[in-house]
Length: 219
Image (cartoon, rainbow, N blue to C red):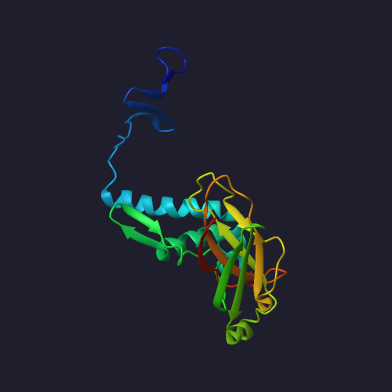
């Protein structure tokens, strides 16, 4: 809205229709408002938005884990930003109508190489408990001094279909050298599929290993 100062013969300031009145020390001016052009996004832009949206949705859900698993690797950048960048570049599979996540390449933690070289997963239905046992590469363990790192076993309900907790993780921590880790899984109203990951982190902060995708489990 334009405003007239000092009566009908005064100066005008503000917007009136397609123009704006401007008062300066050197005089009064009338300027045209810039035209706002609404262009439809190109196919390439739409595809880029899909890529970003799918990765962001999972990184956001996993944010508490991402903040731990990328803390040292991302410094001085934000863990969230580095996790987004890494997984956008490494963890997407192109399909005809968009993208899907390659969970084997999706990383919830980045650091030194994960030393696990073989593992088993066993689910005890009666006690609702998943146990993971593993063997590890002694050379990598010694090189990065990860023997006493705490294990984080993460179950992620990527579909989030309302049937169970979206994130489940172990309360009691074992060490890498112990070779095993259990996690209790709450009972569900319906069948749920979890993506299972494990990584190891130094007890008092500092270093951690890459995450390793162990597979999926349907409960």
